[in-house]
Image (tube, rainbow, N blue to C red; front, side, top):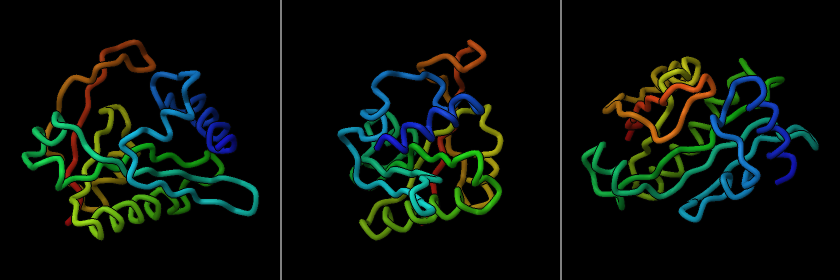
Amino acid sequence: MPACVRMLAAVHRVDGYPAVWSAETEHWLTPEELLGVWVAVDGPNVLGHVALSRTGPDLAATVGRPASQLAAVARLFVDVSARRTGLAGALLARAVRAAVADGRRPVLEVESDAAGAIALYERAGWRRVGTAPGDWLTAAGQPAVVHTYLGPA
């Protein structure tokens, strides 16, 4: 966990993700609704992270499916040194496989300013199904705009 927090701190400094840094980062990485988590490593170095969690009623309503049929891909980030290697796509695919194996459809939410992440999701066959205001401010101090994506079945 400490290695994941250190890597996330570096990602936050470079990308502003997550938009709000908290002393509760370990809790943010392991929410109560967690279904699974995968970490990519190279020897002792943590290079990437992705989580899968249960969805809430608001996300389910946006997608138009019961929450019990969905799993949210979340907390996907890759160390700056491992970018453009296909690692983010591999982590995303791993989370999708886990959701589908559990009989759930993957969904996710992404801030509209995250162009690289959005490009990754769309290349992987995810479909945007909604856009709404977020409940936080971006790194630039503006109200967040969040896109909801439905993943491949």
